[in-house]
Image (cartoon, rainbow, N blue to C red; front, side, top):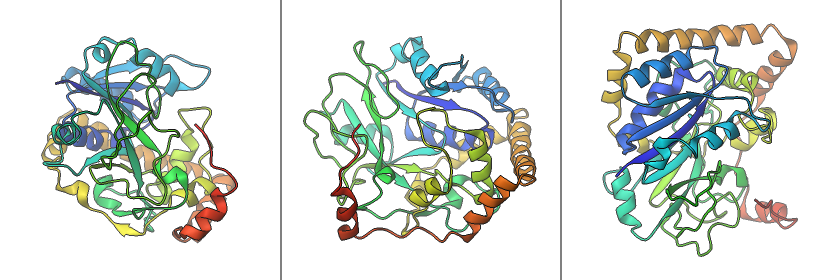
Amino acid sequence: MRVLAILCVKDEASFLLEWLAHHRATGFTDFLVFSNDCSDGTDAMLDRLQDMGWLTHVRTAPHERGPQWAALKAAGKHPLYRAADWAMVLDVDEFLNIHAGDRRLPALFAALPAATAIPVAWRMFGNAGVVALPEAPVTETFTRAAGDPIDWPWRAVMFKTLFRVSEDVKLGVHRPKGEFVWFDGAGRPLPGGPQRIFAGLGTPNYTLAQLNHYALGSMEGYLVKAARGRANREASAFDLGYWVERNLNHAEDRSILTLASAPLRAELLADPILGPLHRAAQDWRKTRFLDLMRDEAWRSLFGRLLMSPPSRALTAAEARLVWSHGLPKG
């Protein structure tokens, strides 16, 4: 069985090898990776990984709705996608974390044998007070996450969909368009498919799988991410509001570390080309942060991050007060 991960990246070389090693260990067999306008060596790293047989690298052409939409349009026509049995559109700060069986994709498929589409909800991992750019892997550095269940915000439980590929399917960022049999990451059937792009509020969502979402990272890293901008022009900006909605640290979750991906990561870092590229990318991020701090607007945002405590969870009653006025559609 061939399972394809579709990824769109810009200036993500510091995180790329950890992400790839984890998802190869999880059971993805193929990677179709699109890059655009890289300054930190991400594209050079992807070229090397392609030469090593780890992935297929495509440089993205401009698109009026942003590079992510250009990537999805190209991915739907790519031979690698056409040859896949299952596929999933992911970002480099999203790590599929399977709880079923041996924590790999075959165990998830076995747990949901009737499913042809599985929306896996984000579990948001907060900043946990980490200020400086870390040297350690993301999954080892950030281990404080949102609780389960969570009543608000709805953006904390948005999902990405693992789906069976067929000719009439149209790719989307969060869910594909087509005819599917839907089961969510808690194993619940969803007749007719999900009505929105987020999972249930006030109900457990991670019984079989979750999508660890490291949306913030360190405070220094967040500034670099904010300056880079979004891959989707329709998305909101990286500002203090984005930070507050995602800085959720209510529970410790180290479950992802039980999957043995470290040997694969070490193998990639030992490569004579990839290793230096990775270290150069880390240096690039540090230099980029220092450059941003010369500007008053970025210094002000950094100061606000330092001033902001971890976000507290809304009670069910508070959440009802918010969503009684209407939930977003989509």
